[in-house]
Length: 120
Figure 1: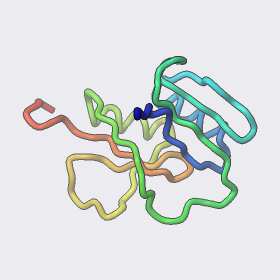
Figure 2 (figure 1 turned 90 degrees about the horizontal axis):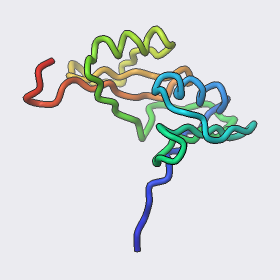
Figure 3 (figure 1 turned 180 degrees about the vertical axis):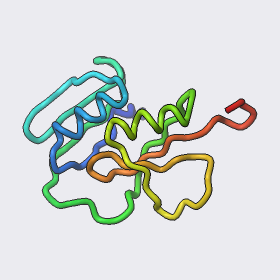
Figure 4 (figure 1 turned 90 degrees about the vertical axis):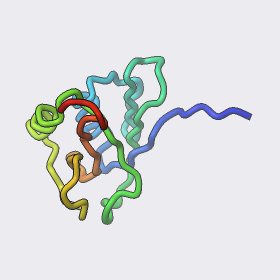
């Protein structure tokens, strides 16, 4: 038996708006768009993707699943994402090497620092 990781589903009040926000933030392409679903991928035929699916109820509390990103330059990427509309959030992480941020609908994600042994 084999499993192929197809995508991560993100529930959203406005899948198109949030999906476009993430597509721009990541530089990904749109592969599907409808009123209730919006899917993006790094490249059209490359998995996994992110699919934003309409859910009328609002987000309640801290996300149980989040995405981590490791940029070449953490400070520059955090600044770019803040300019794009992301916000820094405190979920009780304390003083860490990563920055916890939230997209326009409040979904948390982390911008990681350099790997151990890498220069910042």
